[in-house]
Length: 148
Length: 422
Image (cartoon, each protein chain N blue to C red):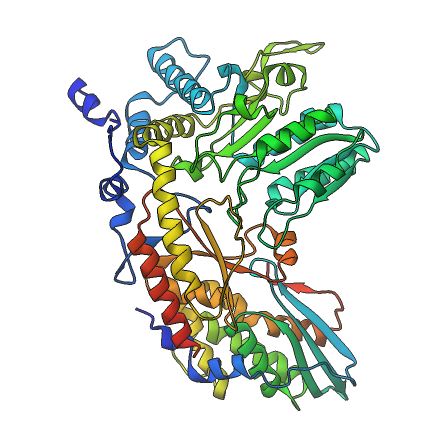
């Protein structure tokens, strides 16, 4: 049986209470919204892109602990990365939260804290909401992306 | 099948002189389930209710012994199935105290009932510039069908506001009524707040401007006796699955003279009396609105569910649920940082709440680990959530089988949530 502590790991709780890069970004040249109409979670991800690199990233909005912590840790993980690296990271992260590739390590560092989400299928959308918004921002889509 | 087996399968309704919640619980087999090794505490009844054995047996009996199509076969099974189906209609008629079984239309649920009225009565009666008045506490199913109709007809939707307790502001509502008002569509009981609306007052006010009244009774019928003639509404819709019947069956009540004048909803078999390529004559009520093979087993299940509810007694159910609600309200309010959303004086068994700094979604996941099933989200009432400044709430909703001990379990579960997020 899945244990609650697998889902609500300390690092996730900590980021949900004190999210990093939680602000608007003056220098942003891309932004996108992520919206989950079922639970009302709503985030905006701001990006400053230059020469194919994520120079700065921030987010704002409201959502559950999983979605907020995921957004916070995502901003840390992709800051300074090249856009294609960020895209790759999303693929790996998606595998982690959906439990694909079993328990094998994904070299995701802190982001592997979200592996517990795979035991809670309805929460996968929470964990990936900000990532979907990030991808939309990277692809230059200006409209809100929805998890539905 | 032998006659003996036949009798054994035939659903029996137990007569219970006094309300004994443990006896009632024994009627619902699913309540014996364990979730994550803990006894199931089912508090998501406003979403859907669990089914008593009597309803399950009625479905088994129908499919085991009676299954056939209705209203057209000359064979015995078809006659029996037709009789059972029509018996259910009569049960619903008595349940709502409607004047005539012809006023009872079987639909898929309250949603379809409301859409039926919008697309038949609405398209025939709503003109450009007319107004439809709803309230701020409506479920999306009593908002969107009217928006669609307004779009089609060039009419306008007006919304009566609610106060901070989640009660309809009756004065403000009455100010919205005028010569342009053609319809008032309102929930009898709010699904997100539990507020009981003053439906008689609403109907009286609507009558003064000659407007029709549709009531969404989905959250009312499981909890209180409803008499459509005494309320004097024109239409009343409810869903079977919220009153212990299967999903996919519901009721639209309409006054016969209105239903007679309305164009049909869907075309097809059973809703006609004769068809030629030149001209089709529609069937009489209620069949005019029941095109195609209906949900026969669902209708029979609904009849069994209402028989069950009657056997327990709606007055007794209401009294019991009020006690559980009062206990739950008192206990929840003791929790630091908990805010109840919906504190109307007249209220049914719904406890919508938010916890400071903790998202309802997380509350729902942690409670589930404790075996407690609640609903989290906007409860298909996004405008109402906006009114109360919350993106979502956690909602515990009651049925006749819930106990004060389960309210205590809910409080212990919330304590656990607060521990995780401490």
